[in-house]
Length: 255
Image 1 (cartoon, rainbow, N blue to C red):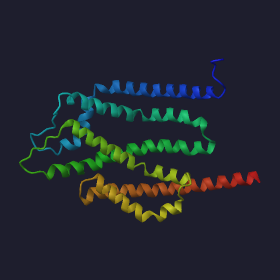
Image 2: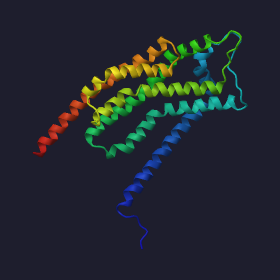
Image 3: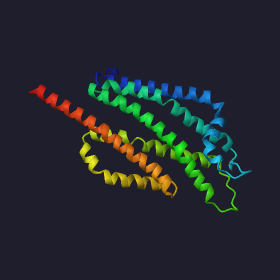
Image 4: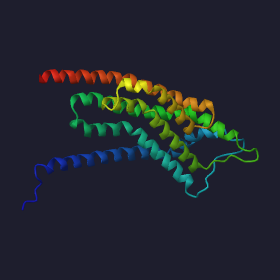
């Protein structure tokens, strides 16, 4: 019996080989960026720690409570930054893999959504670093007892800020999620607009959970989330009208 692949197996093998090659390219570019940045690992960590360091009391500093922390913390952060910087290339590889299987009207929607998702994630991280971190660390370093020295462990700090980076990066994806829900037909723009009061309350609840218990920082997260939702509804209306027009046109062509 022949061991040659059948006509049905060959395309699957080709897809798996293409997927493997693209994954290897992604890993390769991440490693190249990581190697280029590793010399500056301590500087990258110092930049990330700056929002906290400026609020530390005089003669206080960050500490390392584990033997490997001075090496592993900057290493982990540099790897994270490498993946972020490689995101456009990763996006290009993902697009190259999925684009052949999309219809033309799906390509017109998918490409802007993929690019926008990366830009929005970057924007969420930048917002967290420049707007939220000063408020969060200023609050936490000011409420402790006077006889307690504030000296944060570098690994614990890194874990904390990475969680916030991901939280705000994902929160800024709200417009993408809204457009996708509308395009998939799960909701309509009118239906999303009618749920606006619940969305606003949900944004403030998220702000309460992700920020310190003060009105300023909660509002600082909740308001952008609400505005991003409104942005998603706006572009969702455009997508919905185009989708409806395409469906009408296809229906007329079949008649």
